[in-house]
Image (cartoon, rainbow, N blue to C red; front, side, top):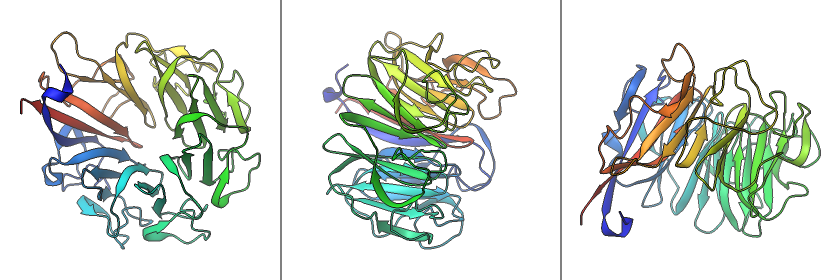
Length: 369
């Protein structure tokens, strides 16, 4: 069905651990099934999940935040956890958001970037090491078209296809050839023609215009996919991988969607987050079994999630694998149970985000105008 023939209202749903209020339902109780966040309203454009906090970008270009706020990562000027959404003051014209371990990042329409929260490694990009409880400009960034946040570092994709990075660099995750933290953005070396970026716990990955992938940073769990477990301070090619359409970095593993709708994964698999038996940690990309028709993927700490195409006239579904929230054993790849769409054909999963132990889905309710 053509999306041009429908209008859609969107609902944010969340599930998993909730000790800091990261689900946004007004409680601190964990949820094994998705709960709708009615307080946000229907105008949500995107969601992002940090370790223990969550962000929502509204269609009017403002940002809501909830969950852990120990470092000011909610941007409301306090350090108080919030169990429901609060507005991030002073932000407008936002086109994208990203959430890291204890910090948050926003891309504005004018191609500049704002950041707030933890700054012990310079991840705010302000030039200092002081935490910021409200958004501040990232120094020297212009012409940014996409952003990504890792555990303690950030990435910015520029309009010319190059990448800037800043923050923690103890494992080479900034890709500038050093292990020095950077309090303002630096260029990622030997990297161009990039179309997408993603930040993991201590590593980074980038999709190139030719459908190949580069990776850099820690490689203890083989999450760089270069066939080794050696740390890389500059980008290296991910082996045996081509035709990639989109990608995402989990905490210690990586995911890529190919043009045929299948998924490749590599890195840490101790909880089955690659869709394989937990005793197998591949050093190069492998096929995730039984998963087809994938639109996009997202990686959390111990699990992976995907937006799956509908079967015949069914709903767009959410797929999951690994050790999810409340699971006692790793889940094998397949449709999520429960499904955030509730099995309704008129609903589709528009976006997914995975934090340390919670997940967020943006579900669109499609209807005739």
